[in-house]
Image: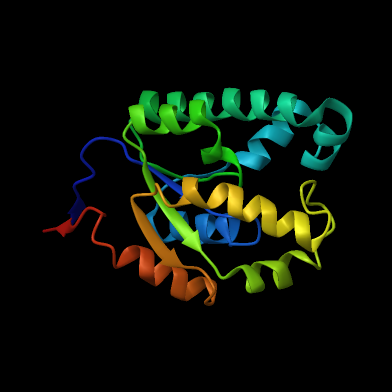
Length: 181
């Protein structure tokens, strides 16, 4: 059996903080046999600092510049290698017009991991390394600001469920190559 991969695909998971992009990305990539790139991890490795430290020391505008550079690097590597990959984007990546343009220009498929805000709040309240999670009011405001960008995604799956269920939903979208004899 062989899998007809056709041209390299960039499958990007987007969604708000706490929606499960990193976990789903790892699991989906393993299931598909594709490489996985977590954009936030790429940023941390490139700069040598964790995301909260970048925000604290250099500010959000510099973080967004680095994020854009890393996104372009990942897109370029994917196209050059001609190997499909799963990319877990940062929660604000697609809210930056230049990032959304780069993803669209290179044929990326965007899957929004949609989760009710109450569940996102519950998940994020226990995590201390989220530089843009200060309090519930700012969390809700940021969510409302980013929602229109998530809604531009090609597909939407419910990420309030267990990660295995999220992967099943993504695989059921019918966007992956079929196994041929």
